[in-house]
Amino acid sequence: MKITELNSEGLRLVTDIDFSIDRDEIYRLSGCKGENNKFNTKLEKIINEKIFQAHSLINPKAVYIIKEVKEAGREDIFFRDKSQIKLKLFNQSISHIKKTAIALCTLGKALDEKIVELNNEGSSTEAFILDIIGSVAIEEIANKINFLICQQTEKYGLQASHRFSPGYGNFNLIEQENIFKIINAEKIGVSLTKSYMMIPKKSISFCIYLGKLKKDSRTQCTICGLKDCNFRK
Image (cartoon, rainbow, N blue to C red; front, side, top):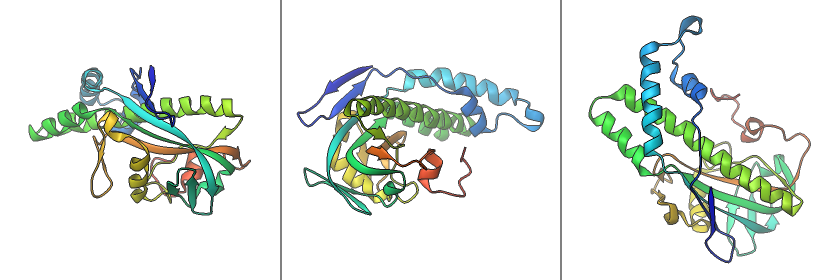
């Protein structure tokens, strides 16, 4: 893993990120295991082939910054440089916010392009599996950047919340715009559409709050606030 300082404000570029692909998670999301927990052998073969292919398509990169918080209201966090982010649920997980980490990760465009190519060829199952692999891989990259931020948090003598991404819980998707104003997304080849969706699709933006955790803040599912999500663990 290589970390490069991009400016005097502490914006960092992360490249050469090692990653592994959680095969069990792919099995879970694809429904590879059928009745009596038996494998669908045909689907398992496709999964194995696409995991091998994905490693040649994925080029993970990330940028992140840790910003000083000037003021934290009930629904807004104001930074010392006058930028801000709106999030209603942050105060349910952490109090006395001192800093906020803002990050953006991507797998690059090659994986997206291959998925489109497979769908155009009529290879929908292969495209579906490769899409799942991408989703699992980008979560792995986001977790690695999350860990980097937590390491810095310890140096500050603070605690880190779980990560929050726009579009989940009460973190409005429109806040992507504010994140992209703060993060140099072009540095890793990520852009934002008019509907606040990211390109490449296998990209994740998130925030982590640095301060003092509340005692009842335990799991990411609790913080997210989505009660009827099929993927709650």
